[in-house]
Image (tube, rainbow, N blue to C red):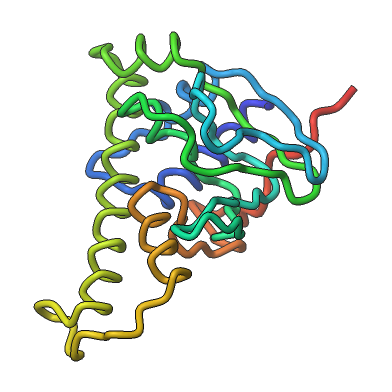
Length: 207
């Protein structure tokens, strides 16, 4: 990406994964620390059950998230829109991929491989702090939304509803997906930041 494209992507990521003292320069360094890959329509990016060798930052396009539910049936649980982190939970806990990700149209990602991740996450540098804080922001959000869904289904504190006895497999899979980090927060595709109108500023990799 050109420096201006990287800066606009960094501003979008700071809005999507907010944390106190967010550093645009730190996010730019994080994007530059990985390498870019482009996926064509319907091309798999990662596969459920496989060992994880990297995490991804979706910088352009959309990605379908597909996983098996508790009955063993395969279903699409969400579509990730850029910018989004994904595949990071396997980096955090060393677990196999919990879903399959497939590009919808052309999708461009920044790949942070395991060696790079382990180095960055332990560094006392701007880019290391940025990675740790973005991961914490993402995980705090997915835990909050997953817990809210559980309260809605069980009638827990603050839910304002009675416990349900007709919880479906789809609803359980949705909650599991929230907690595993596969349900991205709502996004404003035309978000404006610091005078820029920002919409998929990254794009397909040129020749």
